[in-house]
Image (cartoon, rainbow, N blue to C red):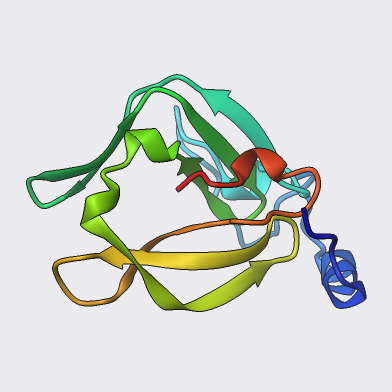
Length: 137
């Protein structure tokens, strides 16, 4: 697995919100809701056995009860799905990349039929300790 560069480590150090307090402008969550400002930084991974179904119109792109849920301050919860539970025939890798200062470099996926706009991502070579995300979609 890759190690974060000095630039990535510097980016980590700049982030003020760590889940210990909410910004004054953050909305208070309602009953049964979560606030992304309460999520931890660095992010945390949790095995999740709830049914996750990803659809594109009527097509089921993924269906799993073996996901990894990632919670990260200021970000929506993300579910990472094992490739065996994804219909890979419906997806195609598209140009572009980004880097998460915690999880590492990401690549992007689009629906094979349709515009080549990214609909998902993965971390093929995540930073330590996010190795469990390697290969998940």
